[in-house]
Image (cartoon, rainbow over all chains, first blue to last red; front, side, top):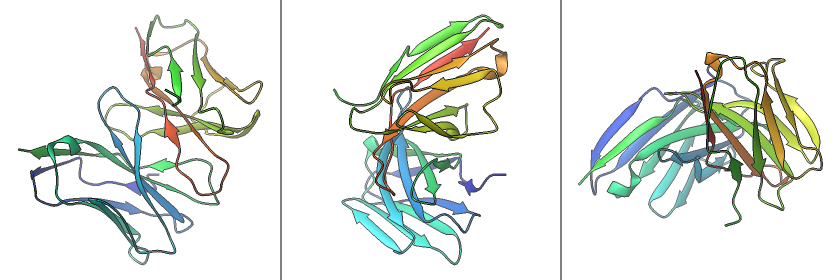
Length: 112
Length: 114
């Protein structure tokens, strides 16, 4: 069963606008969430994370929001840049580490 | 560069052959993970080590797959009697043992079984 879901396989936005990538999870035991970015032929690169005790974490242009009651998180990128074009994976873990459970990914395309 | 290193980057093998991949983690990281990624999917967990101890294995890791981390440093992943369904990107990652912390990934080994 898919415990972490990214229901949008792709997203296209204009440069300078906001990109919003969504992620839903089913396992209420998850208590730490991460976003990774992946370029073709490279491994995933860590972007930003959030603990379940918070509802928002911000790092420069990237903000992650967590809604525990809805089991939903989102990544906001403002302003979007062409270099942000990549596949974005949401991941979750629990019990202080161990394996990451990944979503299927969303391919973001930022057009100049 | 002191990131996670994987070798080889690409491997083409005939069905039924054995293959072995190597991963060198970031030197101070005592956790090491193996994942598999197929087209259109996110990375799927295979196994992980804390130092030399293999702490968890996924049910995806059939008896044809074996992983080792003999001295708690580098790790190898061996696939015996490869099948076409084994074709995928095999990713290695490492992290510190500090509770909640991000894992750093290597560039992966692309396996093609023909």
